Image 1 (tube, rainbow, N blue to C red):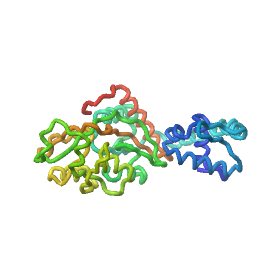
Image 2 (image 1 turned 90 degrees about the vertical axis):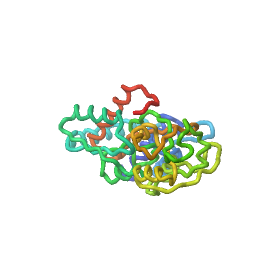
Image 3 (image 1 turned 30 degrees about the horizontal axis):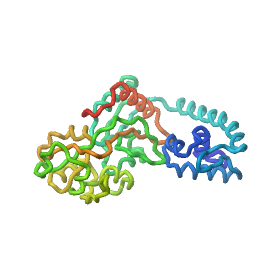
Image 4 (image 1 turned 60 degrees about the vertical axis):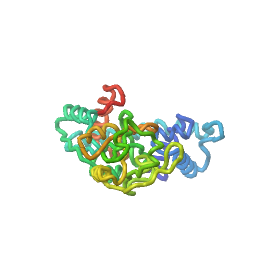
Length: 308
């Protein structure tokens, strides 16, 4: 959406930067990179024809014009947001069908959030749809689902990150015949001796590398294994000793019945996290209501590393 020649996203970036006076923190609030905030600001300043922000190596501050612009912009922007929100609320109520995508397993947090949502909004049916491991963001973009619980990280300009699940230690899924299968744990450095199963390149490179890193924390290369579309494909390949797969502990626990696989905790890797993603534009009222239900469900359960 734009106002004349000014784009709303540029105005949002300026408003948040004016509050934070820090490009990195502004990017975190907007779920974009620091360089994207700078790009949006430069574009806005180009449209206006003057600098709004002074940047030095130590600080960020508003120019006199920037301060004046902020004073006039903030109430106008809040009024515009309120008008749009009211129109959306009037046009669309929480009803119909809420489609929730998920990767891995429907754990206790998600199940409780769905139950809470359905209790609050009995007129809205829910559908839970498993999405491909290799396409974490596509179903939301294509409107096949209204929101999705996916493995992090998420760094997409058009997607907003909602509630984030508690961190989970990573677990290695390997063939029960593999020499490491009997171990109580393995170190992150030992991954250099394995081939890690990855996902097809329909997912962004940064996301694929987070799920199947190409080097250990000490910089030793980790050989790439085969790539897959789905979690079931990956588990089948691991069971056939075609490679090893990194999973969060809750997903490993859910599949613990798989007799051909062993699940070994990995020490020295960053924890795995899940988060709810929603489209930044045109989020449905039901998806927003579900995000609230999920946030409350997560808040009621103390974060820990137990299987979920």
